[in-house]
Amino acid sequence: GDSVTQMEGPVTLSEEAFLTINCTYTATGYPSLFWYVQYPGEGLQLLLKATKADDKGSNKGFEATYRKETTSFHLEKGSVQVSDSAVYFCALLSGSARQLTFGSGTQLTVLP
Amino acid sequence: GAVVSQHPSWVICKSGTSVKIECRSLDFQATTMFWYRQFPKQSLMLMATSNEGSKATYEQGVEKDKFLINHASLTLSTLTVTSAHPEDSSFYICSVLAGANSYEQYFGPGTRLTVT
Image (cartoon, helix red, strand yellow):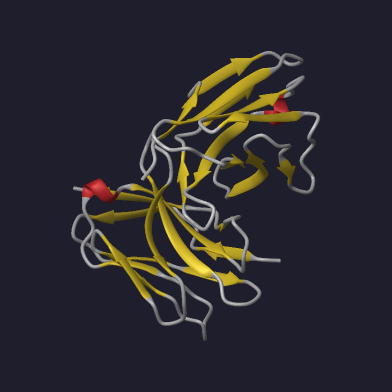
């Protein structure tokens, strides 16, 4: 079945540091890939997405590239801010399904 | 995106009692809603898919008689945990599918259930 493996946290960085959160997946066919973010006390929000190989999703300075050859969708940001502190979830949607498969989430804390 | 609320945000109940959790789509008509369960430091696990006006579709291993789902209107779905036990303690999250031809889901803030 489909599965998503993402880097375990927690991750603690200083402001303006470079961020990478690794995500790899196993799926049949060609899934769509997503990163969701969950700020404290709030619901998950879609951060960015990519629907086919080599697509790059980007939003709020975050980027992730759909790499079919390595089945990866790593999240990156060049300079994190304190306000980026949250839990980040990698997820996939395969075929005609409407059901997302999530990774375990990575807690990011950015210190001033 | 749609605004999705859940009520209550947290609840503590005694073993053997039932608890109802509401999921409301405040500005969007939701034909399809999802219910997830999240254990500490673990992923969201899909429990069931709820379609307005019909019976919910439960994932394998989820007891439909224990987790009752009702999606009676386009703006409200409820999850009732019946005869709750401590092992039912968890974080329950609902989401709304953005449209029949959409993949995007809008998530509620979650409900923390603690069974003592």
